[in-house]
Length: 249
Length: 288
Image (cartoon, rainbow over all chains, first blue to last red; front, side, top):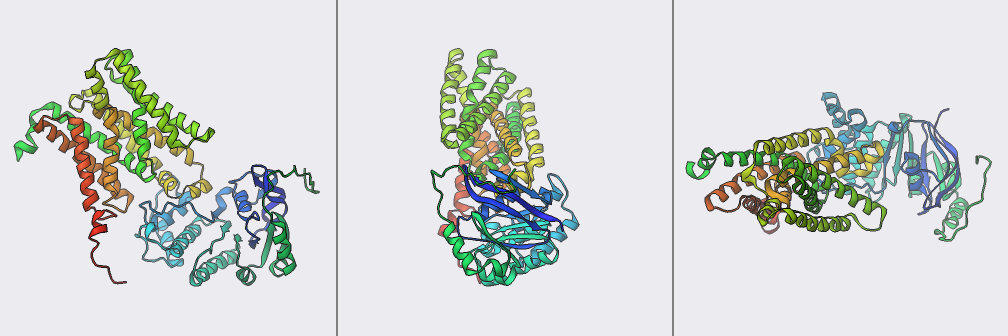
């Protein structure tokens, strides 16, 4: 089976301090993976690394898909909600790779955009300014944009934070569909109930990987406890790491 | 009516030229102003406008009132300050607004000094406040060319520019266009300020860029409409200001900017989007 992502002795971090430490493993194509762990465990950092926004301090990330086939929804999107732009145009940005600078948004594209808006339940919101959307509606719009990106590898960073249960259920349904379509989805989540119910595979991270495999195994109490103990704060005077794993080059 | 609103332009060629110059300036500068405002860079425009002075002044020192020397000098100085301020902000702890302030204050002082070394006080006034009533053919062609380049470049970079304003993180994740688009945009800012410099002078050039854009904010919730309104307000200011200066014998540059200021105040008071009217006379609330 092809790999969507492979980590080899990967260390990611800021200012030489590791936020993800010596991670090895692979995410098979079509996996629905939950990325769990305490705050500061390196979950968001790992996603940034996969997207390519953060170069590794050591080790490598190999992606089985080109950059154009990766869609990424950051935890706090840097969206300027006071900008005078309609929901329709925000969602249409998902076609960037197809349309580019000057590509035409023709009848087919408009139909695709309309379908994406309908799928996330935002029909009738096309002309609304993005500043008038609620938090849940905004997240729905961003999911519609992800739909249009039509990517093989989808990375979601805490997509359900501060959303009501109805919205979460609708968005989970979209994720399930992506899984059925054999796309690879990696989602950072804090709600273990959702992870247990909806995600077959989980990676528990506390800077170093604690457990990775079938969700029921990974989310055992002893693993969770270990993860909590391992996630202390940065030590400003930490010594240079001398760990060498078998994969290290 | 005819005497009041049309005769000045029908009778005098310099008035017609000024009107055409203002049309070109409105088409180029107003859309740029809208983007500056939406990116919270309104004062950056002001700083850049001051920054082009020493370059234009050097051109003046070398060649007198020579269009090309002053244009070239202005563009060079504008780029130098834009790049310099950007580099200082990235390399040191200083924020970009502070470094721009430092650069432009020095530029302004230097520019005034250089002009005074060679020219008279009249020349200085000319440089600071422009001479929209004395536009010759070459200057008009230059203004028209700047407007054309501005509109063409905006058309090409429109999508990434809007994307960079709305959701820079998304643009970074799908494309590397962010940096080149930003540079192209800053180049357009410099170009339009140099154009404005010829008509309205260093101190007022930024007025025709920003005031119409800010006024348009109160009338539209949609970017395209906002830009169309900004262009209309800019041209109306040019037309109204020229009439005012003709009938009252007032200096034309300040008259144009003052009319833009009046239109801004009117928009602030009457505009339907987030203005004073909404605040103090909101009307009864709607059904859910």
